[in-house]
Length: 232
Image (tube, rainbow, N blue to C red):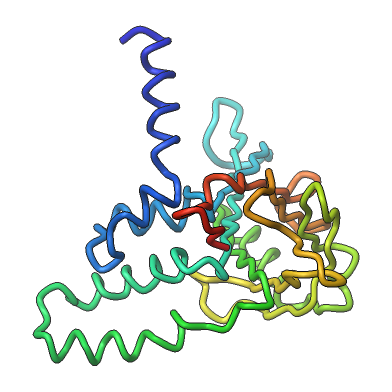
């Protein structure tokens, strides 16, 4: 296939992953593949991978080993991310084969995680995977040892209008799949941090092990719009 055609298909495929196209279908109908895609590569989710070569026994002609560190950054305050987690749980528990009564009970059990109050807050969740257990342990220790005070100079949410918004609350990881939760205000002095007319929003974390030299994930605001409303 000609290179220009391949690039065109990739651009078109990426363009399809907008809020309007993703939310055109009720999340109860999502396949596992779509739910995972929403969590990993959607308007509200990014994964950033850092690689490095280390010496010693491992793969490679000279015995070197390539380490892959992947950070998953997601806007938990965006309902589609919570719906993707919920849909994965549905599939794992055989939801589609349940009776109507069983589905109702299951949905009611999921409500506390789906209907969280984020009217005043933007919540970013961060999880991590590596092919090196030592790297995973190092990042896990970092995320469990940090506090709001220590993260004031390390964790920021930025937009062109509101650069380096400081963190308001922090919750270390409880569930590995969801990870740590970084909470930022939606408004500063009565002014929205981000609006539907904004361009981009960036999450930045400094001094985190496994990232070189910092973790930065940037999201396009336009892709987060659904029926003209910002889903964040």
